[in-house]
Structure formats: structure tokens, C-alpha cells
Length: 251
Image (cartoon, rainbow, N blue to C red; front, side, top):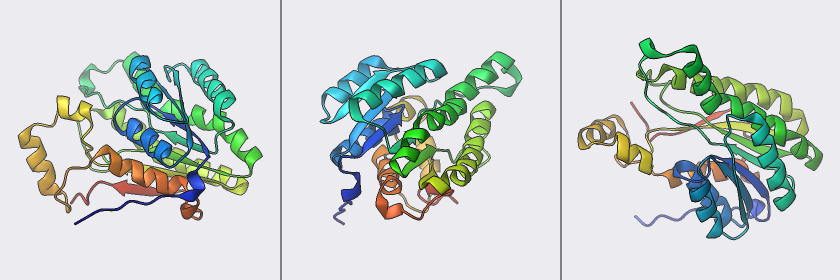
């Protein structure tokens, strides 16, 4: 079956911020907004990959940033705003699903995992929301994870952080809704990024995963990007405070 995907006129010329945009799902999101004609700014720890991606996308701008450093996050967002104007779309994508044994977790490692997977989402919203309020509205999309919904083990600091993203989403939907700002969460299943394929996508694991999916295809980063584009667009004008699953119907 031939597949055709949507173009959203409301995204053309819109200023967008994406965290963790240099690779994986984030890079697909950055490319998706650029293809829609948006002005997309993104941050990532990987300066080389980020600069290379931005160089090939019209209207894109990149700032290298360690999101665990909140001062650096604020500085990077300010630099992108100077280049692209105040953002009315924010995509909180950055995360890292490192595996870890609960018996070996130290307080320092726990705090670092929360800083990597949760804390920056709050402060990114805090930094971007005033501009959206001044503009009369906006859209914020936080990336969650199906891992905690499925009760996966082997990475409790990560799954705890990702579970909290849903509470963050609901709270900000209530706080920012009166300003016309929509806040939603996108929940990926097992997405075939280069990192996942290199580390965990063995033939046996892929076969088991497909057995548990209603749709018998591997999920690609672009599948997540298309949901993000919809939620950022005016087509989703009455969607807020919700979690949108892109996980092929895991049963």
C-alpha cells in the first residue's frame, strides 16, 4: 500500500525548539519540522552530529548543550531565540535509556539519571513558556516511554523518570492551558534508532517484540516525528494533557 503523509500549513514559518535533536528520534523530529517549513532550533550534547544535521536543513539552527547543566540550557535557548525568534513549539525529546542494576545505583547515579531524563524537561518548559504566553499560545510535546507502562525492569532510574514525565505533562497542561498552550506526551514503543539497533536489537529480541505488537512492522523514528508534528500543528488545537502512544499496539 502506498503511504502518503500530511503537510500542516500552520507549521510553516513557526519557530520550534527540540532537545536531543542530533540523532535518533530527535533528528527525525528536526527533519520533519524543517520539511514542513518551520524554523527549527535544536540542542544536543553531540556537537559534531548536531552541526552536521543543521548544515543540511534550511531554516535550522543548532546549539551544543549539556542539558544536565540548566544554566547552559537557558543560554542555548536564548541563543536560538535570537536566531529564530521566540518559539511557539517545544519538543522535550532528550533522554538516554542506559541499563543499570538496582543494586548498584548510588545516590549520585540516581540524580544524574533524573537530570538526564526528567529535570531538563521542566526547565525547558520554564524557559520557553513565557515566549508562548506573549505570543498567545503554543504547543509543548514531552517524550515519554512505554517502558514503565509495560513494567520493564533493568533500568529503574530511567523508568521512574519517564513515568514522572506524564505527571509533568498533566500539571503543565493545567497551568498553561489558560494561556492557550497545549501540553501533551508522546509515548514511543521500541523504536529502531541506530543506538537501539547497535545495542539491543538482536534477531531474537526483534522477533519477540513483533510477536507482542498488533502491527507487525518495526517502528521507525519518523513514525514518532509524524505524531509530534500533528500535536504541534493547529489540527490538534483541542488536544492537551494527554498521552499519545506510538507503539504498534503492544499486547
